[in-house]
Image (cartoon, rainbow, N blue to C red; front, side, top):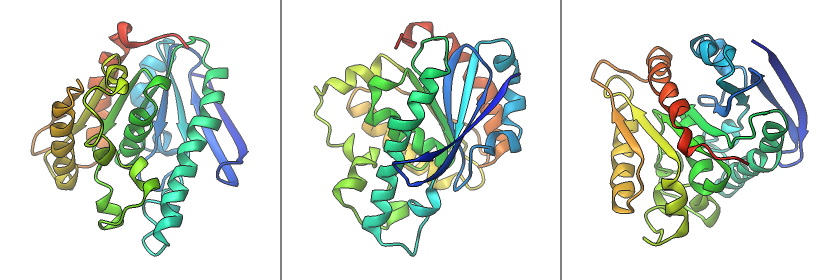
Length: 254
């Protein structure tokens, strides 16, 4: 399959950032890496090999991105206002800098699907729920959706905007975004095994919020043998990606 790498200076983050593109056609996906990892994360842990049947036959394109988690969510010794501002900078980096590159190099003309595992799932959910008009779907595996886990109960208006469990709870039941959400196909999944306790807890809480707001996400909990690990995420990708690709009705033109 074709592999391209983009390296550029991000004006949003004032640092060099990378995107690695796999495949040249089909539905574009934006892949967020695990905690504090970079654009090569999926390739290093065998995800590209797992997804190669879809990348090679032109059904799927994948654009893997860097993160700045060590400066935001995982910057434990940092000033909280700076940390939340850094996450907002990262959000703008994706919407203002990464998406134009995706659009310019995705010949299908379809809106991208965001996906990720671990912290990448959290990023995918933030982007999707903040800007549903920009995306056609979401796949979030083993994320933590409770910002207090990272900020120990601290909150400001910037972190609020990046905390889906907060702004969805307070979203009016007739908000127009709910219709946009329901025009897409959303999948949340986590295991019930080792190191998935917090993921299950926050996903169960988020599931209640989604149900109350009548947001039609597919939420799936795998068994007690399924841990917070690449082995299982690759199995989940093998299971869910074909379903995402088959949902032609939710994939809209740019």
